[in-house]
Amino acid sequence: MMLSAEELLAGSSLTYDIKIPAHVLSPEGESSTSTDKVISEMSVKLRPLNVRDLQLISRASKDNDDLTSVLMVQSALIEPKLSVTDVNALHVGLLQYLLAEVNHISGIISSDAQMEDAVEDPLVKAAYVLASEFGWTPDQVSEMTLGQIMLSLQMLKEKRAVNG
Image (tube, rainbow, N blue to C red; front, side, top):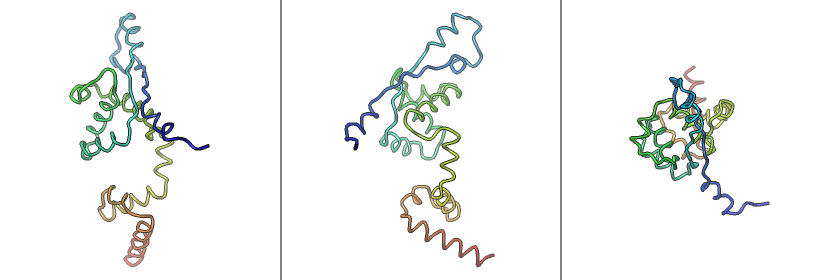
């Protein structure tokens, strides 16, 4: 059965209430049990990132991983709504926790097993080799056809055989 356009796009309008554990909100650990109870019930509302969000974040952050993380969380955070400056002021543990949740609900690779699988992909390895060997950017490699990638790898292999 084929999905309709509406069914494919429906996921982008979902929101998720994400509970934030007390140890993430308050890494120092409050001694008051009433404070722990209040903190343990705290949550935020996130939405999944879409392709447009990631394109804008990529352009805005210009290979700055710290800014990329901040912009991803800021874009996904529905409630409470925070500015980039506010998100940048969060403690690192909370930012990392929220980023992991944003990655999860957006379907972005986040588990170690998924990351290991992605690294083992032959095209990912080829892109890495070409980028490191020729100084190409990931964007330049991603614009190449499979034939261009294979030809470049073969030429590199032959060059290495000649140079020994």
